[in-house]
Length: 279
Length: 288
Ligand SMILES: Nc1ncnc2c1ncn2[C@@H]1O[C@H](COP(=O)(O)OP(=O)(O)OP(=O)(O)O)[C@@H](O)[C@H]1O
Ligand SMILES: [Mg+2]
Image (tube, rainbow over all chains, first blue to last red; front, side, top):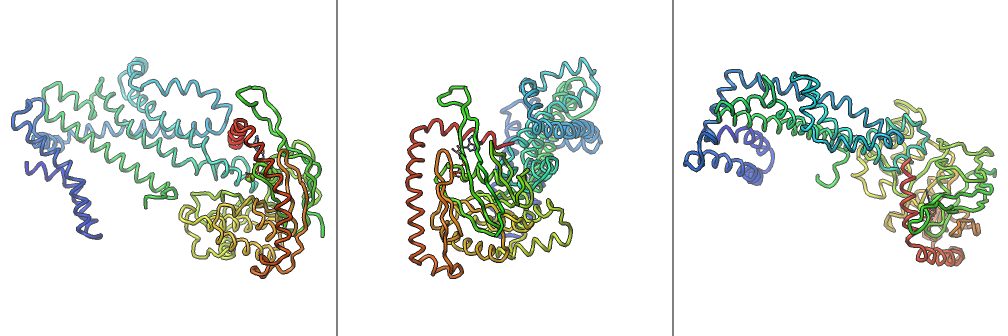
């Protein structure tokens, strides 16, 4: 139990300890407590409930066992193999989606005719759940990497595409007017005004896509993959290795958390001019 | 003095959707037969009730829209579109929120093709002209309304247009800030000798700033009368506003406007539904 609490709270605790040295220690200490208390409580519950025999340990092993399994996977290098496979897929899919959906969204948002033409199709597709198309992708592209990455590209593209379109379309007309009054050519207007004004909206789409990429990835990996965290989870479950299964799940949560945190930081950087009330 | 701007039988109509959900488009005349000249270096003020077409008139002058008929000449040549010989200061500032005060001013300079050191130098010069030396690196959301409007004015002045077009630039400001900016604007005008067309619905503001004040009618918008403001002592602000002559001119414009405002209000009550629709059309067509 002691080991469990330590390893769960370590990353968070150390980060906040550093900042508490800079700012008023008392208030920060309270904040740290507030933020970690729920996680600590969750960890404790997870440890105690199976040990007390309230649930079957075969279904939910105590946290300490899960962490031991996690450590085992880490030291054997197995965890990294799976993580690597998953990261490559999701980053490739995410990257391709960004590279394709942003330019496409800019075009559709900018050319009215194009958007009128494509809107019905876009509406149809955006309401088709990505996972529903997994069998289709598998059918056409096989069960290899291509179909998995394609699925991720598909899932990531929609939030980016739709946000880019609305970002471009909803630029404050007054700003456009103001730029036009300075004699800007349409191309310059696009580069100097439309694009920067749309950046925050585009970034929201990118962040949504980031979360989506991991979600879809795991599902794709559960169907016919030979590596990846989704595969690990599924495989462990199949072989009654509950601790390994939970270790896989925790790894995914952490990756998702880091990924999102990274994107949020990036977003803040790019849209610093938008931070109004909060600070 | 030579003629800088000349409106010749300018009409502007908008196509609007019919009232009460009827789909047939109707024509709405925003401006009818506008005729007047503005002389080089003149400070011309236009007043009129809300919705009479003041902003429409300024958009035409800025080259952002085209007249339905008639022509607008600048230096004897018809307007071809927006250009840097005219600078517009909008009522809602229209600063680029992702650019700092300096960045906003440099935006117009860049459009003019001024580069590098000269651009930075000019930006600094005009920031200090509007009294914002220390605020170069602030983003618009970090500036007060009055400061934003100063940046907007500096942005337009920096690329050195012959004509400054201002659409109710001080309307959203508190009285104190407004008065300060009014007298600053007069100083800048005296210094730079620009031709200014200034739109307002404030009578005091009109009399205080303008050499001539054009009063507009509502529905359709026309020039009802142009009044000379022969006030000599423009520098002493206190003197000017308490001048009995100031009061007389103020009253004259007030009476001219009163009928128009009443008429405009009557219209507004009469077709509230239609007006709402106009407003939404206006937004839509404003996008691009
Ligand atoms: N694009 C448009 N389509 C249809 N009607 C329009 C459009 N632009 C303006 N109008 C109409 O033309 C009239 C004049 O509008 P304008 O914005 O020029 O008024 P204004 O004098 O500037 O009013 P305010 O003092 O309230 O700013 C209004 O009745 C408005 O509804
Ligand atoms: Mg207006």
